[in-house]
Length: 637
Image (cartoon, rainbow, N blue to C red; front, side, top):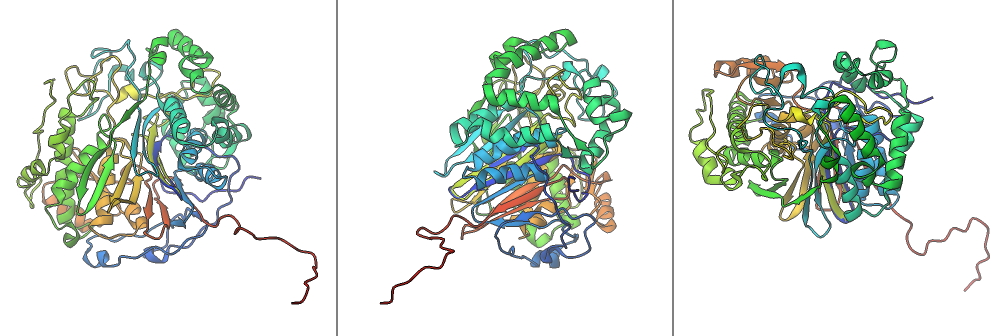
């Protein structure tokens, strides 16, 4: 019998962090990944540093070796909002894996325990997530990987999806009844079915990362995913709820309905789910590599399906697809160096922009969750989103004003216009040079100095909400990310990469890793990362507190605030002119790793997904040790 999991609060996406002894660090965001044998988890009491009320649901991490986290109790004395951590961190000296599913974390930890590095662990975890978190990530998705190698270099692998060559600015007709900022089209053609699918990049990005920076074979790192797909895994309450949310759309496709809507109802939590077709597809990929999709038999099957079903992807879209290795963008905040991917990933650029504005305020003195602090956060969010809409897109098509957005003088000019007592509307003050959300994340580090932060996705829950017949592969619906209106920065152009909010971040102090983090959640990703960094740097929270703390979000319309904020704070924001809306959660499950000077790594995941940190301690036997159970004669003298 498979053991059960403790239920968790509802979340949106998943995330992973990996680190190894050589200080290679990888932070990944992606959609989902399974592992082989489920791990029996027991409910844990609240962490002593996060004890304010009993947790509704504990999602216990597994920790091999470790220590207690440092506490920074002072932030509570100034806070306008207090909260209880629902999970506990894990620690280790030889590696740390944090993903949004325990089986994916176990797959990554298995690679580290076998002698692999953070990159091996990352790719194993992502393939596993495609099995156990299928609503978030898949081989037909896209994403960004941020890798810090043991030599202290940073590598950004852009595996984002691209608009098919057959699409263009007028492919879809915008829905006149769509809400502010929405990308909805008439008939939902950019959201559901084959017409919503963009050219995938995930599989190529994962295979190339493994080939260039990993140590294991593709077959080795895919073994846990194949195991879980073929033998089955237990459905978590979170997966069940995600299916329930999408049931009406999924019922339109017999293949996906057969797996996730048995007898016409959402698959129940605790059910053992076997995905045999997908297991065979994974075995095919393990044997033949990425070429099987981009130039081989799997790709031909995929293109044939597109032709028959009215989709836009053709053979040329697959054969011409390439990943791009990009230079990271860098900023500073109160003595820390903030590093992340550049456009078309908009998140890190605007994180640095927002932090530059906040640097002119003593956020720590204002206090966490006070009306004063939240008002400032809301205003910088609106500023960032105004600039993002005007000028952030694929740099191959749009000249993104990166230098201006990173400029502290520009931030100072925006800052001086903020009214500390009143909400206001903001417009962009940047322009493109030519004039014209459902995701997963992981963070992994090894004891070698490699760190990976990576975010990957199929965009919406279950992507385009159908399975390519006979393959078990769930497609992306990345065309929904493009603006269906012509003439805008993110309008559709053939071969254009999607603009995302992915923010797989690595933060340095004195040139050494201090934090690595990221999360899923669409447009809510980079605002959530910014708030977590402020929690750590301004408020001095523990890592667990920083990822679990209540969040806010706005792009200039309603101000969403999580239910963890008290009513008096809610009302104070209304009094300042914010149109406030209370929500259950903002964005998805954040995964983070903290690095201490003594080599200890601490991993934390939050209540917004099935996140689980696993730390690796211990090590090999001391040289020269011998095992002699039998009695032996020892000559005297």
